[in-house]
Length: 253
Length: 254
Ligand SMILES: Nc1ncnc2c1ncn2[C@@H]1O[C@H](COP(=O)(O)OP(=O)(O)OP(=O)(O)O)[C@@H](O)[C@H]1O
Ligand SMILES: [Mg+2]
Image (cartoon, rainbow over all chains, first blue to last red; front, side, top):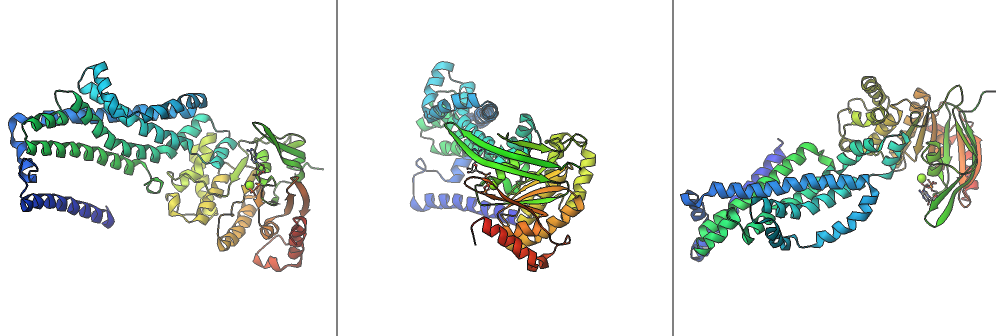
């Protein structure tokens, strides 16, 4: 890794530590009661409480987030690919998809729970619905964005539709796929938690509601931190994949 | 008498959009012999790119006749045309060597031999040592050299260049002109070179075709009688000034 990369990592770490220190200090200095806002240390200590079942809830939420996200990625990219292959399908279905995209997906969650009963699978569906659109729309846009002259070049060589797709369009769309994926990470976390909030029997979101009743703010805060951690892991994985598969200059920031 | 390599007779082109017809080329006729470097010059919108696309077999033409190659030496538009555009259009995710290999891949040519050939071509355009670099690591001029190597990799008979140096700065452009002459001599290809630059056209061409707009047609076609071995000094040659004036006059710019 280059010096610049190390510098960035160090800066990022320092800022994070500083934020936690600021939180900690504010709690102490301002004398906020711990049931309103616990110190980071108090929140962390709840990890030792055995009947909180952290691992179980963490795993449930992680499954929902990753499951829905990966499903959305696969289906979203596949749909986008199909649309670039069939102009008719694109013209027929795209307007509908744009409209469907306007539906507040969060508001669909209660319906999904009615239709599918609550459970991990239902929350995966909710997460999927919310992540699907940005991935589909971004990928479709990337696949469409081929320089006309490049198209001429391939056509002048009598290249097939498949060659155009696999050699030019798909690799060219990759940066767009990733930009859709990045947007979707945040939505994935929100989707899973909303599902758990509405009805469920496990997961960190559900756990937050339960601990709220007992005003165990420290556990709630810890759950929130863990949800964030899942999101950060997901985002990190996306960035890592992007670095592996997208040539530096082709990335769109 | 041997036949010319490319023959255009009264070629006409009409673009049809949903409710309109637009005559992009009213009439163009020319004969190009193998190994010539023909410069196509004219104002914007006079149909230069359109003519190249007809030559590349990308667009059908309306009236007239287009013949390339002959019975003895048949011409296959998909294998025998190399194209260079104003933008290098290198694929950002491919290294330079892989970029140069693109036409060979699309045509399904044997990869090992093509790879060797691509390396040789990169050396010819002055890019040895950049095979494994990505396009963004190269300057605009270097990228355009790579694009030229790409146009040559499948050993086409006809190279079509559409303002290939139009996006370069004046200095790089002069240099690339000299390079192109060298590459043309070494590769012995037939080149049709589209440009806005009147001086550029005379400097490069063995022949110059002048097109005018409204109606879009060929206004002049002449041999350029200047020494074979051209360098920048040639711009002070008396014939040079005469040819440029001739074009300026046709384009109503004197
Ligand atoms: N695909 C197309 N459909 C309809 N009209 C077109 C199409 N391509 C070009 N034209 C029209 O045909 C005319 C000639 O276009 P062309 O691109 O050949 O001009 P040009 O001489 O290359 O111009 P420039 O020097 O600006 O590149 C223009 O008026 C243009 O608007
Ligand atoms: Mg043009």
